Length: 133
Image 1 (cartoon, rainbow, N blue to C red):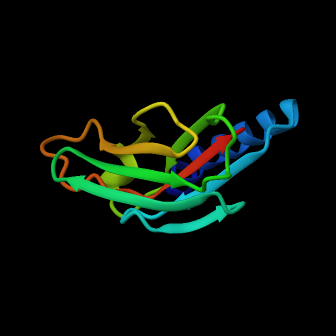
Image 2 (cartoon, one colour; image 1 turned 60 degrees about the vertical axis):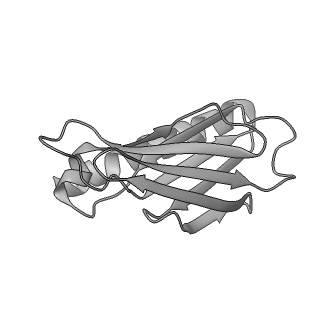
């Protein structure tokens, strides 16, 4: 059952990306970002750097700086999905979402722990980021 909980968001993210790609032939850019703001993987090479900051009991902020030639206009869509299972609370309550409209130069993602009883503690989390032209 735990495996299903971990894999369900990934399945929906991949299914959504594939269906969007098949319907409109939109180039898809994907990345896996670690909870400390380091880049685990990306395809193609479209992320230049990531600026990470965290405020305990509030939120973690990730400013994803894009390569200058990755997008001619702002991305048509971007979506962030957490895959962090570093703790039971992160598995149940962590949410990664865009904190502003994506631009040609950056995508801002915020990590939150929503619904947990008491202070959220560290809201840093690993997440997938997918964008399309």
